[in-house]
Figure 1 (cartoon, rainbow, N blue to C red):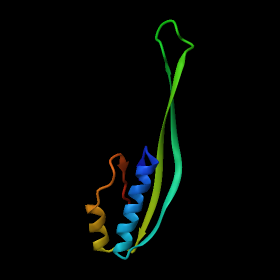
Figure 2 (figure 1 turned 180 degrees about the horizontal axis):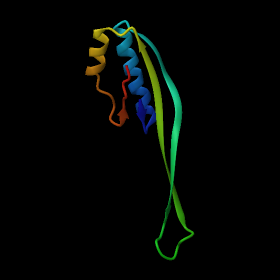
Figure 3 (figure 1 turned 30 degrees about the horizontal axis):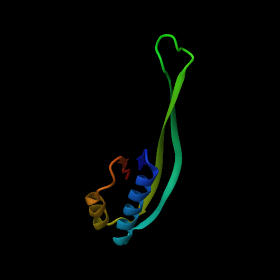
Figure 4 (figure 1 turned 90 degrees about the horizontal axis):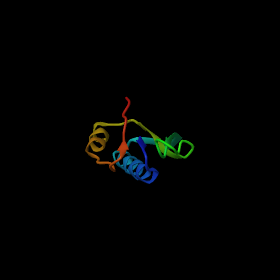
Length: 93
């Protein structure tokens, strides 16, 4: 799971773990992975102010959830689950 806002990511991870546990699947996680920080430096003015710069950064927070012994009810429950906007989920089998 990935998101730019950590609180939305944690709420979505909690919902996924609850749904998986309700359907009697074994769950490990959410495990916080390292945050990727991308920094950008931009000139403030294009002409005379060459030394004046602004810096921005974008942080991508990640969580890992392992679901073991998933049955068809677990998969169906997770497919019907709606997560917060801005949270991206990658499913690997």
